[in-house]
Length: 289
Image 1 (cartoon, helix red, strand yellow):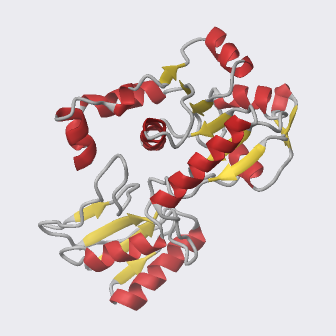
Image 2: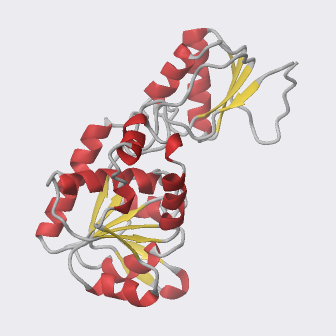
């Protein structure tokens, strides 16, 4: 018998949504581990600092009469941000305004709500014992029609969480088309922006973004990046995971990351832990036995 584990995207730190990834296995010969933030300088800021920056940004933008657009992945990232904002409003850290959810966020959130036993301990207790489900808070409103979307765009200062997380499609593009030229507004990135996406271009400072048949968007709104909400482990967490995993695998494959990151992480794991490591290329074949 030969045992292989694939981490998928994982976070080796407790978040508002989940407990840390497990690192105890009955048997383990080979580990395939994601390396999204495996580069030597890929460190995420602590979650408390990330939430503080998000609150500060929202307060500033709402005070000047603007709207906050948060592009987020429907699964995981949106729920993390929802939990932070719900608590922020409940504890008066940010104003009590409407938080609009657009895209597939409602469906993904419904799955989390249906299976609270998979959520972290505090959130599970809050839902089961205290009878308070933060996902159902009154501040959240689903955008389920074009008419409502237009009212949100033209309406009062608010927070909009919408897909897609990298601005490569989805309702976020309509918000961007209508709100990007107003410098009172802000676009807040809370997730990884891959090369080649509109999100990455705007994050890098592009002020004019070609949108095909829709023409070119002029970007005047404020651009903020809030690290710390990622569903991925950063470099420090990845190294700690290998240091604490039981049993220690014979081989580790660093995958799911830019080539430089997978090579850097594989080399560092080998140097520190003396475990055979690989950074495989596409279509490369390995024999495990």
